[in-house]
Length: 105
Image: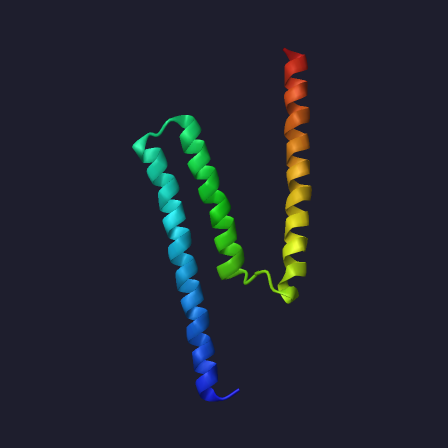
């Protein structure tokens, strides 16, 4: 790799981080604005949920460099499986605690 190619790669990577930062900051600002404006709760939940999912995609793409290429697809599958397991564990815990709370009343 020549010096010019190395500098070009560094610029490309920096540009990716800047775009990711701007997108993440914009999505975070959107969530705060939804609350500050005082939207109805169902609309606010929908907008904040969509912004959160978009935020996850932005972090995967721009900061973790996980795309749909063949080499990173395995990493993405590992992350999605881990998310599934954590969701099942957290959801099961909340369900059990809710059931116990209901029985104690």
